[in-house]
Length: 337
Image 1 (tube, helix red, strand yellow):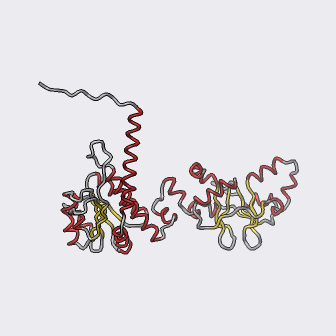
Image 2: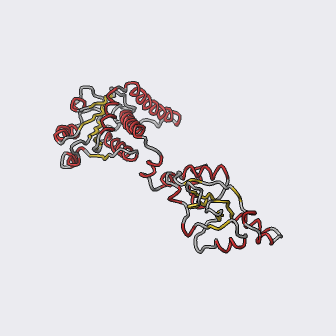
Image 3: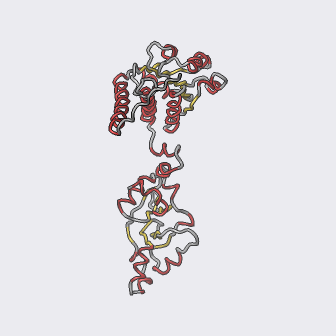
């Protein structure tokens, strides 16, 4: 005879929300607890990675392996060369990725994960240095590591206390802490971050204006001494064009700017004689400009705060080298708001 257990009654929505909050609080308490336990072993690990000329191979098995993959990705995107190494595959040849002077950063909550422990002696024979991150003070990983960051006992947030949860949050936070301390030491800046993130909204915002500005045949230039009519004829360009003309003085420096909006206002007026007047009398003098080498994110803030549509990019001598049109950055504006 098969005995079937009666399924528990469905908990109320309030009870489930309360339990979800208790999980979040349990994991945050674990991270807070480990923050208080942090000691000089953390700094020695940072010193080792900072001074190494090799790469960091980050490893872990199971849930710790997923954490290791994320930590390796964070390292790589913040200036520390790092790769994920699967410990089971390392047992079958992938350990050849590790060489003299490289660092093996190993995650294991128990410190006894079979696949991971088995590669530690071989990693050292190959000239690698092992940094272990574990809860087990007397574990094999702790005892086999050149530097061991031991975060101590952690109570999992899982209802039955078995599924890795709070321990994963702790390992992830420790990996981030190492990466971001290394960032500060190396002086890693947003422009450096942008080099590793060329795509997506974030990548576009971290590019230099030099990479997005209109230049060459797309840059409309004319002398401010010419009449409005002469400038409009001289600055005519086929194809993609910006909505502004950069007016130059006798030395080729930016003297002013004349936009399509300015032209519309002249056309709407009844006095057509204005088209015979010098552009220097009509143009906007001392327009907002941007030096080359500025981040797009910073320029977006100028567009937002000053409510302009075109910003000339000038060199150190004040000569226009390009212009940024707001339409080129329209897909980034929601992020800048």
